[in-house]
Length: 171
Image 1 (cartoon, helix red, strand yellow):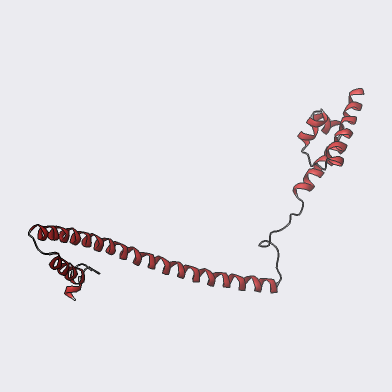
Image 2: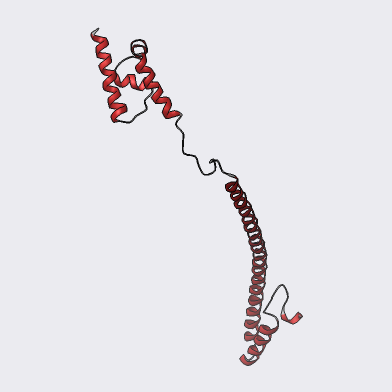
């Protein structure tokens, strides 16, 4: 009888500690561990307490949860607003996708231009290297500085500016 009284006191103490003061929703196993009794003692000798603990736990599990805005029931007017918002979002998505495609197209064109400009730069560097060689040869042959400047101006105006694969002399 003393053990039964001890178990009863442990149940009362644990109920007060966990539920009344702590606001907990323990499982039967957790409750029994905290009370220091076995589940079989609880179910056999204190079926009402076991039922009370289980009902408290179940009330927590089946408590109505706060619904998200998507899951909330809507009236006909709210549904019309939601459908309209959905249409607007779809239109906005299409607009953004179109802008994105245009940006991708621009990037592709710019990349093509960059490749072309790099090729042009390479051609210009080759021309300058060749012209530098020509100037040195002319200087070694004794051509006057004034004549070399005239040749440079002609080269600069007619040959050097290679643009889009063509030089100005061929225009």
